[in-house]
Length: 322
Ligand code: COA
Image (cartoon, rainbow, N blue to C red; front, side, top):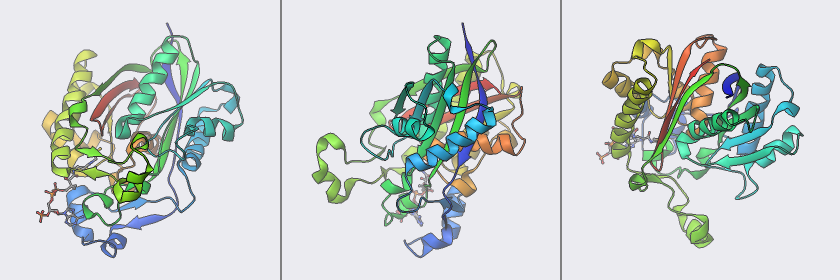
């Protein structure tokens, strides 16, 4: 059986930065409120005309370069996104065209903020089964496009970006386990009411924006992230001391701190990019991972646990030896 390993990573953020002070001028909030309740100081926002595929392409090219490969080696492309450029074709198909290497399977998956964990878990299965040897896995979002900029309870939380990994077949792991979960009973706590099959009329009625019961989401997020980490450790026969880095979905600094405290995980070993990236949905985990690889915190041979949580609700973990 083949194992899979992370051969290279890349990340990309749009150039435009929106600070908390900028938001003070748009909605009834204060920079201090946003920072104290979320840990977010600023977020990157795509310029008009800058799309999810544009961000995905830059992150993908950086991951390909870091892996030391040519795009022609890639035999599977998976993009996790909730904010694709088009209803179809997929961002993955567009990305394949940008990379100029045709023929391999390319598809998008949608699990909102858990999207990258799902995509990485699926890529791992393809490689295990011998159906791929070099996967490009991307989480990319222009999430700010589905935010109501007049709703202070949501517009302060999100940003845009993309993160990517090249995952290749290896004779030892690499990815040690993946666990993908969902509970559809929570579908209305965090959602976009408008949808394609309900017709575009509804979209025009201003419902094409993220709606969230923030307080309830917060509590479920902390409980679910904590439980997922403990389950991943237990099923691998490991304990907290065996994990070098925890890379959680980057939603809110208080969610990260409360999760770490609840399970006794040292907060200094939790990678956080919340302050400067905000919540970039499916892009948040690969972006945070790439930041920590490039600044030298995550090193080859270390055990890293990725844990995601998002709308659906969806959640999941990927445990890997980098
Ligand atoms: N500026 C100022 N006040 C704000 C505000 C803002 N940007 N957003 C909300 N408020 C107000 C609310 O209207 C409320 O006022 P009220 O008491 O007069 O009704 C008050 O602040 C408290 O709201 P509450 O929702 O209880 O605050 P909170 O401490 O839970 O923080 C969130 C709000 C959104 C930061 C927090 O609930 C959260 O982070 N939830 C999880 C969101 C998330 O991460 N979602 C994605 C998961 S993948």
